[in-house]
Image (cartoon, each protein chain N blue to C red):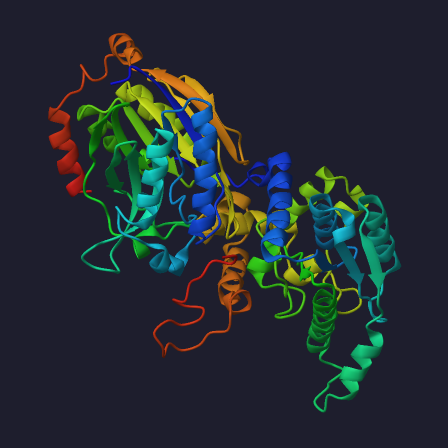
Length: 282
Length: 277
Protein backbone atom coordinates (compact mmCIF):
# COMPACT_ATOMS: atom_id res chain seq x y z
CA UNK A 1 0.00 0.00 0.00
CA UNK A 2 1.23 3.47 -0.83
CA UNK A 3 1.19 5.80 2.14
CA UNK A 4 0.77 9.47 1.42
CA UNK A 5 3.51 11.38 3.22
CA UNK A 6 2.46 14.92 4.06
CA UNK A 7 5.79 16.58 3.47
CA UNK A 8 6.60 19.86 1.75
CA UNK A 9 7.68 17.87 -1.30
CA UNK A 10 4.07 16.89 -2.14
CA UNK A 11 3.38 20.54 -2.91
CA UNK A 12 6.41 20.93 -5.19
CA UNK A 13 5.35 21.77 -8.72
CA UNK A 14 6.76 21.00 -12.12
CA UNK A 15 6.97 24.75 -12.59
CA UNK A 16 7.72 25.01 -16.33
CA UNK A 17 4.80 22.68 -17.03
CA UNK A 18 2.42 24.54 -14.70
CA UNK A 19 3.43 27.88 -16.19
CA UNK A 20 2.84 26.58 -19.72
CA UNK A 21 -0.56 25.10 -18.83
CA UNK A 22 -1.82 28.27 -17.15
CA UNK A 23 -0.65 30.44 -20.04
CA UNK A 24 -2.32 28.13 -22.56
CA UNK A 25 -5.50 28.08 -20.50
CA UNK A 26 -5.80 31.89 -20.39
CA UNK A 27 -5.01 32.36 -24.09
CA UNK A 28 -7.35 29.57 -25.16
CA UNK A 29 -10.28 30.90 -23.15
CA UNK A 30 -9.83 34.46 -24.39
CA UNK A 31 -9.74 33.24 -27.98
CA UNK A 32 -12.78 31.00 -27.56
CA UNK A 33 -14.96 33.65 -25.95
CA UNK A 34 -13.78 36.38 -28.31
CA UNK A 35 -12.74 38.82 -25.56
CA UNK A 36 -10.19 41.55 -26.20
CA UNK A 37 -8.25 40.83 -23.04
CA UNK A 38 -8.57 40.63 -19.28
CA UNK A 39 -9.24 43.05 -16.47
CA UNK A 40 -8.07 42.11 -13.02
CA UNK A 41 -7.88 43.61 -9.59
CA UNK A 42 -4.28 44.06 -8.48
CA UNK A 43 -3.77 44.56 -4.76
CA UNK A 44 -0.01 44.10 -4.76
CA UNK A 45 -0.34 40.73 -3.03
CA UNK A 46 1.22 37.54 -4.31
CA UNK A 47 -1.95 36.09 -5.89
CA UNK A 48 -2.97 39.14 -7.89
CA UNK A 49 0.60 40.02 -8.92
CA UNK A 50 1.21 36.45 -10.08
CA UNK A 51 -2.08 36.33 -11.98
CA UNK A 52 -1.42 39.66 -13.70
CA UNK A 53 2.13 38.63 -14.55
CA UNK A 54 1.22 35.23 -16.00
CA UNK A 55 -1.73 36.72 -17.90
CA UNK A 56 0.72 39.19 -19.45
CA UNK A 57 3.10 36.37 -20.35
CA UNK A 58 0.18 34.56 -21.95
CA UNK A 59 -1.59 37.38 -23.78
CA UNK A 60 0.95 40.19 -23.96
CA UNK A 61 0.77 43.08 -21.53
CA UNK A 62 -1.36 45.23 -23.83
CA UNK A 63 -4.26 42.82 -23.30
CA UNK A 64 -3.99 42.92 -19.52
CA UNK A 65 -5.41 45.79 -17.48
CA UNK A 66 -4.77 45.82 -13.76
CA UNK A 67 -6.99 47.94 -11.56
CA UNK A 68 -5.65 49.01 -8.19
CA UNK A 69 -8.69 49.81 -6.09
CA UNK A 70 -7.47 51.08 -2.73
CA UNK A 71 -9.59 52.70 -0.05
CA UNK A 72 -8.45 55.03 2.67
CA UNK A 73 -8.71 52.65 5.63
CA UNK A 74 -6.47 49.92 4.27
CA UNK A 75 -4.32 51.64 1.65
CA UNK A 76 -0.78 50.29 1.76
CA UNK A 77 2.01 52.15 -0.02
CA UNK A 78 4.26 49.10 -0.16
CA UNK A 79 1.55 47.05 -1.90
CA UNK A 80 1.06 49.84 -4.43
CA UNK A 81 4.80 49.99 -5.09
CA UNK A 82 4.84 46.22 -5.55
CA UNK A 83 1.93 46.31 -8.00
CA UNK A 84 3.62 49.07 -9.99
CA UNK A 85 6.93 47.23 -10.14
CA UNK A 86 5.22 44.06 -11.41
CA UNK A 87 3.25 46.04 -13.99
CA UNK A 88 6.47 47.63 -15.22
CA UNK A 89 8.36 44.36 -15.37
CA UNK A 90 5.60 42.40 -17.15
CA UNK A 91 4.37 45.28 -19.29
CA UNK A 92 0.70 45.46 -18.36
CA UNK A 93 -1.28 48.65 -17.81
CA UNK A 94 -2.21 49.62 -14.31
CA UNK A 95 -4.85 52.15 -13.32
CA UNK A 96 -5.66 53.32 -9.82
CA UNK A 97 -9.10 54.25 -8.62
CA UNK A 98 -9.72 55.25 -5.02
CA UNK A 99 -12.95 53.48 -4.02
CA UNK A 100 -13.29 55.48 -0.78
CA UNK A 101 -15.96 57.91 -2.12
CA UNK A 102 -18.05 55.00 -3.41
CA UNK A 103 -17.66 53.17 -0.11
CA UNK A 104 -18.74 56.30 1.81
CA UNK A 105 -21.74 56.76 -0.51
CA UNK A 106 -22.79 53.16 0.07
CA UNK A 107 -22.38 53.48 3.80
CA UNK A 108 -24.39 56.72 3.87
CA UNK A 109 -27.23 55.08 1.96
CA UNK A 110 -27.39 51.95 4.13
CA UNK A 111 -30.01 52.36 6.86
CA UNK A 112 -28.69 49.29 8.69
CA UNK A 113 -25.01 50.28 8.54
CA UNK A 114 -23.18 49.42 11.75
CA UNK A 115 -19.63 50.71 12.09
CA UNK A 116 -18.77 48.01 14.65
CA UNK A 117 -19.47 45.29 12.05
CA UNK A 118 -16.11 45.28 10.30
CA UNK A 119 -16.76 42.06 8.38
CA UNK A 120 -19.84 43.40 6.58
CA UNK A 121 -17.98 46.59 5.77
CA UNK A 122 -14.96 44.64 4.58
CA UNK A 123 -17.14 42.51 2.31
CA UNK A 124 -18.73 45.68 0.96
CA UNK A 125 -15.27 46.88 -0.11
CA UNK A 126 -14.62 43.62 -1.98
CA UNK A 127 -18.00 43.83 -3.71
CA UNK A 128 -17.44 47.47 -4.71
CA UNK A 129 -14.16 46.38 -6.33
CA UNK A 130 -16.09 43.69 -8.22
CA UNK A 131 -18.46 46.38 -9.57
CA UNK A 132 -15.51 48.41 -10.90
CA UNK A 133 -13.86 45.39 -12.48
CA UNK A 134 -17.01 44.30 -14.30
CA UNK A 135 -17.74 47.84 -15.48
CA UNK A 136 -14.30 47.99 -17.05
CA UNK A 137 -14.71 44.51 -18.52
CA UNK A 138 -18.04 45.47 -20.09
CA UNK A 139 -16.73 48.74 -21.50
CA UNK A 140 -13.54 47.24 -22.91
CA UNK A 141 -15.02 43.91 -24.13
CA UNK A 142 -12.75 42.01 -21.81
CA UNK A 143 -13.30 39.36 -19.18
CA UNK A 144 -12.52 39.54 -15.48
CA UNK A 145 -9.63 37.34 -14.47
CA UNK A 146 -9.74 36.34 -10.81
CA UNK A 147 -6.72 35.55 -8.69
CA UNK A 148 -8.18 33.21 -6.07
CA UNK A 149 -5.95 30.35 -4.98
CA UNK A 150 -6.94 26.87 -3.87
CA UNK A 151 -6.21 27.41 -0.16
CA UNK A 152 -8.53 30.38 0.25
CA UNK A 153 -11.15 28.91 -2.07
CA UNK A 154 -11.28 25.62 -0.16
CA UNK A 155 -11.50 27.54 3.11
CA UNK A 156 -14.17 29.87 1.76
CA UNK A 157 -11.79 32.64 2.76
CA UNK A 158 -13.09 35.22 0.33
CA UNK A 159 -16.07 37.52 -0.13
CA UNK A 160 -19.00 35.86 -1.85
CA UNK A 161 -19.62 37.74 -5.14
CA UNK A 162 -16.67 39.96 -4.23
CA UNK A 163 -13.03 39.15 -4.81
CA UNK A 164 -13.89 35.67 -6.11
CA UNK A 165 -16.27 37.02 -8.76
CA UNK A 166 -14.57 36.42 -12.09
CA UNK A 167 -14.91 34.73 -15.46
CA UNK A 168 -11.77 32.64 -15.12
CA UNK A 169 -9.49 31.98 -12.16
CA UNK A 170 -6.23 30.55 -13.52
CA UNK A 171 -4.58 29.92 -10.13
CA UNK A 172 -7.51 28.27 -8.39
CA UNK A 173 -6.01 24.78 -8.54
CA UNK A 174 -2.79 25.93 -6.80
CA UNK A 175 -2.41 26.14 -3.04
CA UNK A 176 -1.05 29.41 -1.64
CA UNK A 177 2.45 27.99 -1.13
CA UNK A 178 2.37 26.72 -4.71
CA UNK A 179 1.41 30.18 -5.96
CA UNK A 180 4.49 31.47 -4.14
CA UNK A 181 6.62 28.88 -6.00
CA UNK A 182 5.10 29.92 -9.31
CA UNK A 183 5.59 33.61 -8.49
CA UNK A 184 9.31 33.12 -7.97
CA UNK A 185 9.56 30.91 -11.04
CA UNK A 186 8.09 33.51 -13.39
CA UNK A 187 10.28 36.24 -11.97
CA UNK A 188 8.38 38.03 -9.25
CA UNK A 189 10.75 39.38 -6.60
CA UNK A 190 10.93 37.43 -3.31
CA UNK A 191 9.55 40.37 -1.32
CA UNK A 192 6.27 39.96 -3.23
CA UNK A 193 6.33 36.16 -3.55
CA UNK A 194 6.81 35.60 0.16
CA UNK A 195 5.01 38.49 1.80
CA UNK A 196 2.20 37.72 4.25
CA UNK A 197 -1.22 37.48 2.63
CA UNK A 198 -3.96 39.90 3.56
CA UNK A 199 -7.53 40.22 2.30
CA UNK A 200 -7.24 43.89 3.51
CA UNK A 201 -10.86 44.06 4.56
CA UNK A 202 -9.82 46.13 7.59
CA UNK A 203 -6.56 47.67 8.85
CA UNK A 204 -3.96 45.11 9.97
CA UNK A 205 -5.98 42.22 8.54
CA UNK A 206 -3.64 39.22 8.07
CA UNK A 207 -4.79 35.94 6.59
CA UNK A 208 -2.73 33.58 8.73
CA UNK A 209 -3.77 35.33 11.94
CA UNK A 210 -7.43 35.11 11.04
CA UNK A 211 -7.23 31.53 9.79
CA UNK A 212 -5.26 30.53 12.88
CA UNK A 213 -2.71 28.48 10.96
CA UNK A 214 0.35 29.07 8.78
CA UNK A 215 -0.15 28.49 5.06
CA UNK A 216 2.69 25.93 5.08
CA UNK A 217 0.61 23.80 7.47
CA UNK A 218 -2.80 24.70 6.08
CA UNK A 219 -1.80 23.67 2.58
CA UNK A 220 -0.63 20.26 3.77
CA UNK A 221 -3.88 19.77 5.72
CA UNK A 222 -5.93 20.71 2.66
CA UNK A 223 -3.76 18.48 0.45
CA UNK A 224 -4.48 15.60 2.82
CA UNK A 225 -8.22 16.32 2.72
CA UNK A 226 -8.07 16.57 -1.08
CA UNK A 227 -6.52 13.10 -1.10
CA UNK A 228 -9.23 11.62 1.13
CA UNK A 229 -6.98 11.27 4.20
CA UNK A 230 -8.71 11.11 7.57
CA UNK A 231 -8.35 14.00 10.01
CA UNK A 232 -6.55 11.62 12.40
CA UNK A 233 -4.00 10.62 9.76
CA UNK A 234 -3.35 14.24 8.84
CA UNK A 235 -3.00 15.37 12.46
CA UNK A 236 -0.69 12.46 13.25
CA UNK A 237 1.56 13.06 10.27
CA UNK A 238 1.81 16.81 10.79
CA UNK A 239 2.08 16.47 14.58
CA UNK A 240 -0.79 18.90 15.14
CA UNK A 241 -4.08 18.59 17.01
CA UNK A 242 -6.90 16.60 15.44
CA UNK A 243 -9.19 19.42 16.54
CA UNK A 244 -7.40 21.90 14.25
CA UNK A 245 -7.69 19.54 11.29
CA UNK A 246 -11.35 18.88 12.04
CA UNK A 247 -12.05 22.62 12.25
CA UNK A 248 -10.44 23.13 8.85
CA UNK A 249 -12.31 20.19 7.36
CA UNK A 250 -15.61 21.52 8.73
CA UNK A 251 -14.89 24.98 7.34
CA UNK A 252 -13.99 23.56 3.92
CA UNK A 253 -17.22 21.53 3.78
CA UNK A 254 -19.56 24.22 5.09
CA UNK A 255 -18.29 26.81 2.60
CA UNK A 256 -19.48 24.95 -0.51
CA UNK A 257 -22.31 27.52 -0.85
CA UNK A 258 -19.66 30.15 -1.64
CA UNK A 259 -18.15 28.09 -4.45
CA UNK A 260 -21.27 27.16 -6.39
CA UNK A 261 -24.28 28.72 -8.01
CA UNK A 262 -27.12 29.48 -5.57
CA UNK A 263 -29.07 26.40 -4.60
CA UNK A 264 -32.59 25.99 -5.88
CA UNK A 265 -35.12 23.23 -5.45
CA UNK A 266 -35.73 20.91 -8.34
CA UNK A 267 -39.01 21.61 -10.09
CA UNK A 268 -38.33 21.27 -13.80
CA UNK A 269 -37.04 18.79 -16.32
CA UNK A 270 -33.45 20.01 -16.17
CA UNK A 271 -32.35 22.25 -13.32
CA UNK A 272 -29.64 24.92 -13.36
CA UNK A 273 -26.75 23.96 -11.15
CA UNK A 274 -27.94 20.36 -10.86
CA UNK A 275 -28.60 18.37 -14.01
CA UNK A 276 -28.42 21.13 -16.60
CA UNK A 277 -24.93 20.48 -17.91
CA UNK A 278 -23.32 22.39 -20.72
CA UNK A 279 -19.68 23.00 -21.63
CA UNK A 280 -18.23 26.42 -20.81
CA UNK A 281 -17.26 27.18 -24.39
CA UNK A 282 -19.34 25.51 -27.05
CA UNK B 1 -2.85 -7.88 -47.46
CA UNK B 2 -0.07 -5.34 -47.13
CA UNK B 3 2.89 -6.49 -44.99
CA UNK B 4 4.11 -2.95 -44.57
CA UNK B 5 1.64 -0.24 -43.62
CA UNK B 6 2.14 3.50 -43.26
CA UNK B 7 0.07 4.94 -40.45
CA UNK B 8 -0.71 8.62 -39.79
CA UNK B 9 -1.52 9.78 -36.28
CA UNK B 10 -3.69 12.86 -36.61
CA UNK B 11 -3.54 14.61 -33.27
CA UNK B 12 -6.13 17.36 -33.53
CA UNK B 13 -7.99 19.70 -31.24
CA UNK B 14 -11.72 19.91 -31.79
CA UNK B 15 -14.45 22.48 -31.46
CA UNK B 16 -17.06 21.28 -29.00
CA UNK B 17 -20.21 20.19 -30.80
CA UNK B 18 -19.10 21.67 -34.14
CA UNK B 19 -19.14 18.65 -36.44
CA UNK B 20 -18.75 20.66 -39.62
CA UNK B 21 -15.58 22.37 -38.38
CA UNK B 22 -14.17 19.10 -37.07
CA UNK B 23 -15.02 17.22 -40.28
CA UNK B 24 -13.37 19.90 -42.40
CA UNK B 25 -10.27 19.65 -40.27
CA UNK B 26 -10.25 15.86 -40.60
CA UNK B 27 -10.62 16.07 -44.35
CA UNK B 28 -7.58 18.36 -44.55
CA UNK B 29 -5.58 16.07 -42.30
CA UNK B 30 -6.47 13.05 -44.41
CA UNK B 31 -5.36 14.82 -47.57
CA UNK B 32 -2.07 15.78 -45.96
CA UNK B 33 -1.53 12.29 -44.56
CA UNK B 34 -2.27 10.76 -47.95
CA UNK B 35 0.34 13.02 -49.55
CA UNK B 36 2.79 11.56 -47.06
CA UNK B 37 1.82 8.05 -48.16
CA UNK B 38 -0.45 6.95 -45.31
CA UNK B 39 -2.73 3.93 -45.71
CA UNK B 40 -4.43 4.52 -42.38
CA UNK B 41 -5.26 7.86 -40.71
CA UNK B 42 -6.29 7.79 -37.05
CA UNK B 43 -8.13 10.54 -35.16
CA UNK B 44 -8.73 10.82 -31.39
CA UNK B 45 -11.66 9.70 -29.26
CA UNK B 46 -14.85 11.69 -29.99
CA UNK B 47 -12.93 13.68 -32.59
CA UNK B 48 -16.11 14.40 -34.51
CA UNK B 49 -17.50 16.51 -31.67
CA UNK B 50 -14.83 17.10 -29.04
CA UNK B 51 -14.81 15.21 -25.77
CA UNK B 52 -16.39 17.45 -23.13
CA UNK B 53 -19.86 17.59 -24.62
CA UNK B 54 -21.89 17.15 -21.47
CA UNK B 55 -25.60 17.48 -22.43
CA UNK B 56 -24.67 18.41 -26.02
CA UNK B 57 -23.99 14.73 -26.40
CA UNK B 58 -27.66 14.14 -27.29
CA UNK B 59 -27.75 16.56 -30.21
CA UNK B 60 -24.30 15.44 -31.41
CA UNK B 61 -25.11 11.74 -31.68
CA UNK B 62 -25.85 9.97 -34.92
CA UNK B 63 -26.26 6.41 -36.11
CA UNK B 64 -23.30 4.50 -37.51
CA UNK B 65 -23.29 4.26 -40.48
CA UNK B 66 -24.85 7.71 -40.67
CA UNK B 67 -24.34 11.17 -42.15
CA UNK B 68 -20.82 11.81 -40.87
CA UNK B 69 -19.47 8.33 -41.50
CA UNK B 70 -21.01 8.39 -44.98
CA UNK B 71 -19.22 11.65 -45.68
CA UNK B 72 -15.93 10.32 -44.38
CA UNK B 73 -16.38 7.08 -46.29
CA UNK B 74 -16.45 9.16 -49.47
CA UNK B 75 -13.18 10.77 -48.35
CA UNK B 76 -11.72 7.32 -47.65
CA UNK B 77 -12.68 6.19 -51.16
CA UNK B 78 -11.40 9.35 -52.82
CA UNK B 79 -8.10 9.36 -50.97
CA UNK B 80 -7.78 5.55 -50.92
CA UNK B 81 -7.09 5.41 -47.18
CA UNK B 82 -8.46 3.72 -44.10
CA UNK B 83 -9.77 6.01 -41.36
CA UNK B 84 -10.36 5.51 -37.65
CA UNK B 85 -12.17 8.16 -35.63
CA UNK B 86 -14.18 8.50 -32.47
CA UNK B 87 -17.76 9.77 -32.33
CA UNK B 88 -20.99 9.63 -30.36
CA UNK B 89 -23.17 6.84 -31.71
CA UNK B 90 -26.93 6.85 -31.39
CA UNK B 91 -28.75 3.54 -31.25
CA UNK B 92 -31.09 2.94 -34.20
CA UNK B 93 -33.60 1.42 -31.81
CA UNK B 94 -33.60 3.89 -28.91
CA UNK B 95 -32.74 7.55 -29.48
CA UNK B 96 -31.33 8.24 -26.02
CA UNK B 97 -29.10 5.16 -26.02
CA UNK B 98 -25.66 6.42 -26.92
CA UNK B 99 -22.25 4.84 -27.26
CA UNK B 100 -18.72 6.21 -27.21
CA UNK B 101 -17.68 4.57 -30.45
CA UNK B 102 -14.63 4.11 -32.65
CA UNK B 103 -15.33 3.68 -36.36
CA UNK B 104 -13.22 2.04 -39.04
CA UNK B 105 -13.72 3.10 -42.65
CA UNK B 106 -11.89 1.86 -45.72
CA UNK B 107 -11.65 2.73 -49.42
CA UNK B 108 -14.24 -0.02 -49.92
CA UNK B 109 -16.69 1.55 -47.47
CA UNK B 110 -17.79 1.18 -43.88
CA UNK B 111 -15.87 -1.63 -42.18
CA UNK B 112 -17.09 -1.69 -38.60
CA UNK B 113 -17.26 -0.08 -35.21
CA UNK B 114 -16.29 -0.65 -31.62
CA UNK B 115 -18.37 0.59 -28.69
CA UNK B 116 -16.23 1.48 -25.66
CA UNK B 117 -16.23 -1.21 -22.98
CA UNK B 118 -14.83 0.75 -20.07
CA UNK B 119 -16.51 4.09 -19.48
CA UNK B 120 -14.63 6.19 -16.92
CA UNK B 121 -16.95 7.73 -14.37
CA UNK B 122 -14.68 9.14 -11.73
CA UNK B 123 -12.63 12.30 -11.20
CA UNK B 124 -13.53 14.63 -14.11
CA UNK B 125 -15.05 11.84 -16.21
CA UNK B 126 -18.78 11.19 -16.41
CA UNK B 127 -19.12 8.80 -19.33
CA UNK B 128 -21.54 6.36 -17.70
CA UNK B 129 -23.94 9.24 -17.23
CA UNK B 130 -24.27 9.48 -20.99
CA UNK B 131 -23.12 6.27 -22.64
CA UNK B 132 -24.16 2.64 -22.63
CA UNK B 133 -21.38 0.12 -22.20
CA UNK B 134 -20.24 -1.77 -25.26
CA UNK B 135 -20.12 -5.58 -25.18
CA UNK B 136 -17.97 -6.61 -28.09
CA UNK B 137 -14.31 -6.45 -29.04
CA UNK B 138 -14.29 -7.13 -32.77
CA UNK B 139 -11.21 -7.66 -34.91
CA UNK B 140 -11.50 -6.41 -38.47
CA UNK B 141 -9.73 -8.23 -41.27
CA UNK B 142 -8.75 -5.51 -43.75
CA UNK B 143 -6.35 -4.90 -46.61
CA UNK B 144 -3.99 -3.25 -44.14
CA UNK B 145 -4.01 -6.04 -41.58
CA UNK B 146 -6.13 -7.36 -38.74
CA UNK B 147 -7.17 -4.37 -36.66
CA UNK B 148 -8.65 -4.13 -33.19
CA UNK B 149 -9.96 -0.90 -31.73
CA UNK B 150 -9.97 0.25 -28.11
CA UNK B 151 -10.73 3.63 -26.57
CA UNK B 152 -8.72 5.48 -23.92
CA UNK B 153 -9.58 4.04 -20.46
CA UNK B 154 -9.84 0.55 -22.04
CA UNK B 155 -6.04 0.52 -22.04
CA UNK B 156 -6.06 0.29 -18.22
CA UNK B 157 -7.63 -3.16 -18.57
CA UNK B 158 -5.11 -5.57 -20.07
CA UNK B 159 -7.81 -8.06 -21.01
CA UNK B 160 -9.11 -5.75 -23.77
CA UNK B 161 -5.87 -5.70 -25.75
CA UNK B 162 -5.23 -9.34 -24.86
CA UNK B 163 -8.56 -10.51 -26.19
CA UNK B 164 -8.04 -8.57 -29.41
CA UNK B 165 -4.62 -10.16 -29.79
CA UNK B 166 -5.97 -13.62 -29.11
CA UNK B 167 -8.58 -12.99 -31.77
CA UNK B 168 -5.75 -12.32 -34.18
CA UNK B 169 -5.30 -8.55 -34.12
CA UNK B 170 -1.94 -7.43 -35.47
CA UNK B 171 -2.49 -3.75 -34.85
CA UNK B 172 -4.42 -2.32 -31.93
CA UNK B 173 -5.63 1.23 -32.42
CA UNK B 174 -6.23 3.08 -29.18
CA UNK B 175 -7.97 6.42 -29.61
CA UNK B 176 -8.00 8.67 -26.59
CA UNK B 177 -9.02 11.91 -24.89
CA UNK B 178 -6.61 11.92 -21.99
CA UNK B 179 -6.06 15.05 -19.89
CA UNK B 180 -2.54 16.06 -18.95
CA UNK B 181 -2.55 14.85 -15.36
CA UNK B 182 -2.83 11.26 -16.62
CA UNK B 183 0.01 11.34 -19.14
CA UNK B 184 2.36 9.12 -17.14
CA UNK B 185 -0.23 6.34 -16.92
CA UNK B 186 -0.85 6.27 -20.64
CA UNK B 187 2.80 6.46 -21.56
CA UNK B 188 3.43 3.32 -19.54
CA UNK B 189 0.26 1.40 -20.30
CA UNK B 190 0.28 1.83 -24.07
CA UNK B 191 3.82 0.44 -24.24
CA UNK B 192 2.90 -2.35 -21.81
CA UNK B 193 -0.11 -3.44 -23.92
CA UNK B 194 2.14 -3.64 -27.00
CA UNK B 195 4.88 -5.62 -25.25
CA UNK B 196 2.71 -8.05 -23.28
CA UNK B 197 0.73 -8.96 -26.40
CA UNK B 198 3.53 -8.66 -28.97
CA UNK B 199 1.35 -6.43 -31.09
CA UNK B 200 1.63 -3.06 -32.81
CA UNK B 201 -0.24 -0.33 -31.00
CA UNK B 202 -1.18 3.07 -32.40
CA UNK B 203 -2.21 5.55 -29.72
CA UNK B 204 -3.83 8.82 -30.83
CA UNK B 205 -4.74 11.38 -28.21
CA UNK B 206 -6.66 14.62 -28.36
CA UNK B 207 -5.04 18.03 -27.80
CA UNK B 208 -6.49 21.40 -26.90
CA UNK B 209 -8.41 22.63 -23.88
CA UNK B 210 -12.03 21.75 -23.18
CA UNK B 211 -13.71 22.99 -20.00
CA UNK B 212 -10.34 23.49 -18.31
CA UNK B 213 -9.13 19.99 -19.24
CA UNK B 214 -5.86 20.15 -21.17
CA UNK B 215 -5.36 17.12 -23.40
CA UNK B 216 -1.70 16.25 -23.73
CA UNK B 217 -1.36 14.76 -27.19
CA UNK B 218 1.83 12.71 -27.35
CA UNK B 219 0.28 10.24 -29.82
CA UNK B 220 2.60 7.38 -30.68
CA UNK B 221 3.07 4.32 -32.81
CA UNK B 222 4.53 1.50 -30.76
CA UNK B 223 6.28 -1.62 -31.98
CA UNK B 224 5.64 -5.05 -30.42
CA UNK B 225 8.93 -4.77 -28.52
CA UNK B 226 7.78 -1.50 -26.95
CA UNK B 227 9.95 0.80 -29.00
CA UNK B 228 8.37 4.03 -30.22
CA UNK B 229 8.30 4.14 -34.02
CA UNK B 230 6.99 7.68 -34.19
CA UNK B 231 5.62 10.18 -31.74
CA UNK B 232 3.63 13.39 -32.01
CA UNK B 233 4.28 16.56 -30.03
CA UNK B 234 2.98 17.09 -26.54
CA UNK B 235 0.16 19.63 -26.13
CA UNK B 236 0.00 20.84 -29.75
CA UNK B 237 -1.74 19.67 -32.87
CA UNK B 238 0.46 17.39 -34.95
CA UNK B 239 0.35 14.93 -37.79
CA UNK B 240 3.04 12.25 -37.73
CA UNK B 241 3.47 9.05 -39.66
CA UNK B 242 5.25 5.79 -39.10
CA UNK B 243 5.64 2.50 -40.88
CA UNK B 244 4.95 -0.91 -39.42
CA UNK B 245 5.88 -4.27 -40.87
CA UNK B 246 3.88 -7.28 -39.70
CA UNK B 247 6.93 -9.50 -40.18
CA UNK B 248 8.20 -7.93 -36.94
CA UNK B 249 5.41 -9.63 -35.00
CA UNK B 250 6.85 -13.10 -35.46
CA UNK B 251 10.37 -11.94 -34.65
CA UNK B 252 9.17 -10.34 -31.40
CA UNK B 253 6.97 -13.33 -30.52
CA UNK B 254 10.03 -15.53 -30.80
CA UNK B 255 12.06 -13.25 -28.56
CA UNK B 256 9.30 -12.66 -25.96
CA UNK B 257 6.82 -15.53 -26.40
CA UNK B 258 4.05 -14.20 -24.16
CA UNK B 259 1.27 -15.65 -26.27
CA UNK B 260 2.87 -19.11 -26.25
CA UNK B 261 3.27 -18.94 -22.49
CA UNK B 262 -0.22 -17.73 -21.56
CA UNK B 263 -1.89 -19.89 -18.87
CA UNK B 264 -5.60 -20.28 -19.59
CA UNK B 265 -6.37 -21.86 -16.20
CA UNK B 266 -5.63 -18.51 -14.53
CA UNK B 267 -8.53 -16.87 -16.32
CA UNK B 268 -11.12 -18.99 -14.48
CA UNK B 269 -9.56 -17.94 -11.22
CA UNK B 270 -9.47 -14.31 -12.33
CA UNK B 271 -13.16 -14.45 -13.13
CA UNK B 272 -14.03 -16.01 -9.77
CA UNK B 273 -11.91 -13.51 -7.86
CA UNK B 274 -13.46 -10.58 -9.69
CA UNK B 275 -16.99 -11.81 -9.05
CA UNK B 276 -16.13 -12.03 -5.35
CA UNK B 277 -14.12 -8.83 -4.95
